[in-house]
Length: 200
Image (tube, rainbow, N blue to C red; front, side):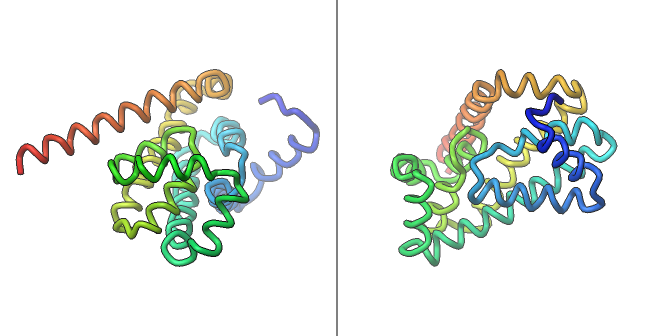
């Protein structure tokens, strides 16, 4: 991986050489899901590439960190929306995304959470909206787990298969791939919901 600065390289080497690398990744994933605007893939891909023997453990730690953050975000929407929730949305500049997602969520529920978990859209809006609406937490957690599991374990498989080349592929095609995968998942879930409605 080509680092942009010496400090960035030192920071990466410190994480890579740490005995607590998995915990650090889980914390970083938690922070990225809650508030950090920097994609975790920038750190995750090179770490996976140089730690292929632990690649699935890395994907697991990252997914769990995101999942814990999702539950916290759900709790903010459910209990603290009028205070912390509204401030957070304004602070992150997500007013338009939040308003747009509300209608989408009201119509599609589970499929909406799945799609936004894959698409390059801030996941915070899904967490807060689900909590505020009283959406069943088990279904929310399941949707978040599937969406983020696809994201991180899919990335792990790509790194396992193609190595460092995945970083170049991700930078060039991340947006297109996320849009395509999110659209496919959304169509599949909506199709299953339609079939279930016919059966009933």
